[in-house]
Image (tube, rainbow, N blue to C red; front, side, top):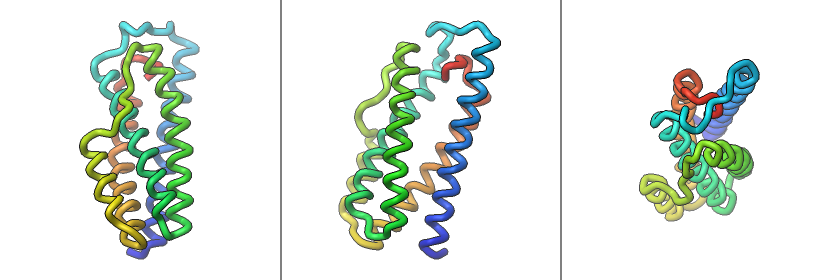
Length: 160
């Protein structure tokens, strides 16, 4: 598969993730207009786990995106990294607001897995870095899309 095809697939998965989040937000907004707002007591353990997982994922996307903005050699990879930093920074701010309302602490440090990924990427350069970064993004976004889809149908708290 060519590099352009991989970039295209990654952008496609990013768009899918964005659409899932937008649909979930729209559904939550609509349901919160018709339903009584639940308090933090309504936040289940699964909801809390999801909020923390999203916080970890956003932080990783921001950290790795910043790294890619510095190290990537392909302009499309750099643009993608900038988009990741922008979108996940915005998402993280919104997440922090919801988490604070629900008395959930959002992680502010990379997970050991994400630290290891960052460490491995830091050792690479040129096209090798670009390929490894995009492969990691593709893998992570597949997982993220599945988690968001699942949470959008199972979350007990409309704010989540």
